[in-house]
Length: 358
Image (cartoon, rainbow, N blue to C red; front, side, top):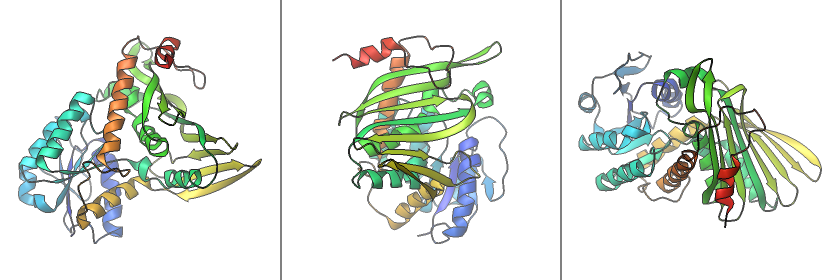
C-alpha cells in the first residue's frame, strides 16, 4: 500500500535531512510512496523554510484533512522533550505509523511517557537509526560472526565542529545527545547489553561565551560479555571523523569509517589480520536504507515494533535512552571540564573509579 508522508518539525532533521532522502526514495521506490506532496507542520515559532515537494500546513488537524491518517507515515523530527505529547495528539487524529528521530526520549521519565502512548494507542514506531542500517555496521557484524575471534574492545570516535548550532540552538542539553546515540545503538547491536562505567562532558567555549557540556563527551560501557567499549565525541574538532575500531582476541583489527557528510555515501573498512591489511569500500546511504526499511515494513503490515528484538525494535532504542540517562546523571555529579584535548582527554578519574568499584 503506497503511503503518504507528514513531517512534524521542519528544522535541520525534518527539512534538512529527511526531506532530501524522501525525494530520492519516492523516485526509486514509487511502490512505497503515495503520489501526493509531502506535508509539513512546524510546531516552533520561527520561520519555516519552503522547499520543493513540501507543502506546509498550519496544524496536525489541517494535515489530517489533506492526507488520510490511516495511510500516512508521520516523521517526528522535534526535540525529544515534547515527543510523547506529539504522539498523543497525532494518535488522537488517527495516525498510527511513526518514524521518530533519535533518541527516542530525553530521559527515563520521558521514555516512560512515550512507551505508554505507544502501547495504549497501539502505535507502530520506527526510530531513525542510520548507523544500525549502515552497510558498514552490517559488514562488521558479519566479520565478527565469521571466525575473527572474540571481541576484546571497541572504540568509537565521532568528531566534528559544531560551534554555530551549539551557540544558537538550545535543543540539546549536553554533547551526549548529539552524535553518541548513533554509536551507542551499534555497540548494543554488536556487543549486547551494557552498563555505564564512566562518562564526562566538556564545555564549548568561543571567546567569552560558554555553552555548558556542549564541547564534547566521553562514554565508557561494560557489556555483559565483559567487553569494554568507549565512545569519544569532540564537537570542537577541526576535522570530521566517524570511526569505529574493533580489536579481537586473535589479533585482528577492524577500522571502519562511516560517511561524514550528506554528499558522500561511501564507507571504508580496513581489515587487519595475520599481519596484512585490506581495504573495503562500501556504498552506504544509511539514512535512505533506514527510511525505506521503515516504509516497507509499514506497507507490508508486519507485526508491531513495540517489543521487537530486531535492530529497529523499540527495545534497543529504549535501552539506549536509559544508558544515556545514566551517563547524564553521572556527568551531573561534577562540573564539566573546560577543554577537550583532541586525542588525550581522559574520563575524570573520580567518575571512572566510582563505576569500576566492585
